[in-house]
Amino acid sequence: MEHWQIALIIMISYLVIALVVGVWAGKGQDSSSLDEFAVAGGKLGLIVMWFLMGGAVFSAFSFLGAPGWAYEKGAPAYYIIIYTAFAILPWYIIGPKISRIGKKFNLYTLSSFFRVRYRSKTLGIIVGLLALLASIQYLATQLTGMAHIFNIMTEGRIPFWLGALLAYGIVVIYVATGGLRAAAWSDVFQGLLMIIISWVVGIAIVNQLHDSMGVMFTNIAAENPGFLQIGKEGSAMGTIPFTTTILVSVIGFLMWPHLFTKSYASSPKVIKKTVLVYPIFALFLVPLLLVGFAAKGIVDANLIESADQVLPFLITTVMNLPGWVYGLVGAGALAAAMSSADAITHNATLETTDGVIRTIFKDLSDKTVLKIMRIGVFGIGGLAYIITVFGGQGLIVLLLGAYGAIVQFAPGVYSALYWRGATAKGVISGLVVGAMLNFYFQLVADTTPLGIHAGIIGLIANVVIMIVVSLLTKSDTSEEEDTYIRS
Amino acid sequence: MSKKKFTTIYIMIVTIPFLLLIFPLFEIANRATPIIMGLPFSFFYIILVILITFSGVLILYKFDPEHQFEEGDE
Image: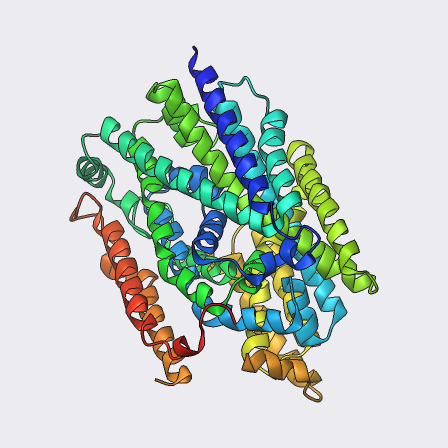
């Protein structure tokens, strides 16, 4: 059998198992319960929660982007490990608080978290829409990753549209049937698979291309020490961009709306324990960076379209490995992309239905909302798919802007938890200005002052404006703000 | 330990190592050599700081005052 046929068989088998696990997880639960679909009844256990969190971090970016960064830029790729390890830590303090608030007010989304605390429908809808657009962007990235993997591993036999459809279609089916619980259990399966594969393949690649890790790094250090440093001659990134990129990633990580859904879905104790074991996931990324370093000096940059393709290129072209390795790496990368896509698809549906539609049409019963949610999963899935396959440039810019805006939720969220003085008007003005500045510096301007990350520039303006406007508009106190702060 | 005191200690325990990994403090480890356990010095240092941080958090968890009140879900 040809390599690509073996690879195809392995990847298809993986997809079948993923589908079975996902659909099986939703079985036996109350299929008519909105609470079950949205937050798994608030009762997800530790292991499932852990993988659900890990799955969200281990994405197409970690499988394809992380080796690409290490290959192309060198030391700046460390930022991925640093932020993955540290971004989760504030959750130990704020996660339990958010969880208690969610249970008290029966929340499912970030949008309703804002709406209730600030007594503002407008704010709820703005947050819901931004969350939707950002999620679509995130999904499009995962879908592109899935499609590329299928395409490369089958040596071009599976076209782009079909690969994305196969892999993502399965995600949509199990999310629509089983809700959060299905996403969580399939993440356990996908998580184990991608961790094992990345270690085995990562270490095998390093050892085969270079005698050992030490020899590999000694050679790189001798040839170009700047490549293994930051802000030095020969380095790909300066100290300020490196630091502000880490800062924006650390702050932004916990602002992703699906983190709120997950907080509502588990108890404070489970949240804390998840934080404790989480750094293991950051260390799981190490072999993927090693792959990138291993390709340095071996893969000619002109032969690949983008640095993201360095891992698949190594396997299929440079090393000429057997077909089952193609298949395993393909399955691992698919697992990484799918385990991110499921939670995001689920959450984007909640944000639009619970956050936006339910705010506009008030008198919907839980049953109707659940029905809308299930259909919504297909709607959002379809939208993400169409944008990935046919998306135009203008649309992509808009989505990227929303993606960058996620971190701008931070002032509003932390104020809700710790500062009575914040008002809806303050949060909205800060958010709008922050998001616009971010958009300008990220996508319109060529450079930023001192190389500071666009998101940080937006955040500084956001915080200042939020405080000033809040102080000017503050009137009487509300019951909700009290509950939020005391929870 | 009171909840407030716990939170303060927690924030310190996670912030200090974080500052060691970003500039200006990261400059102390911003070097390619020596190669330790097969890794460039900077890479090794980052992994070491992460491991120390989480050992710290793991130990601190034992002193979390909310423990005795939270059995499973609330």
